[in-house]
Length: 186
Image 1 (cartoon, helix red, strand yellow):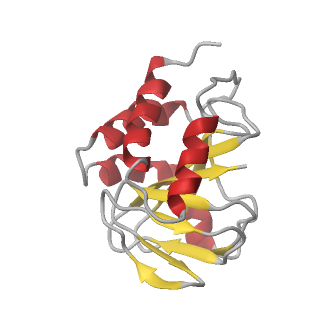
Image 2: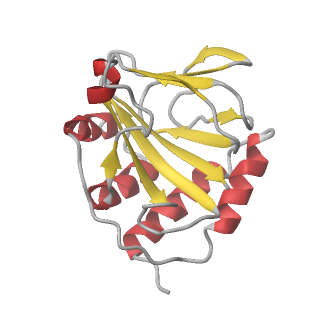
């Protein structure tokens, strides 16, 4: 199986950023990088939601290699709402989208790792949630994260957020659009 050059370039850029992750998040980052070495096939069809119009302005906040390589693959992604999104929370319903790059329904169909992205319109809160795997986030724009062990934090471009397994966590956009990558070993 041969991986597309655009996806490989994105993973190479992500690897550079993930190697800067420290503390317990470093083990998560290493596990993800180890698992993605073997490419997989997929038949995912690209889809977009209107909130995806915020991706370009979010990417304009930086000019790093990771942002540029993500920009080259984002139109190939299948963007959708969080599985448990509630239509009663219209701001979240209309103001967010997630896409899987590696993992179920992603550019590479995998069951050993999830690599994906979240975009949110300005002012949107991604509600509290939890999941079994630990995860590392890399911001591609300004944004804030919270979990049950820390206050709201903006790690800055080039920073990262680590969420331990099963911890309650959330994220939010400020006055600008929010765009972040997430990495979970399954």
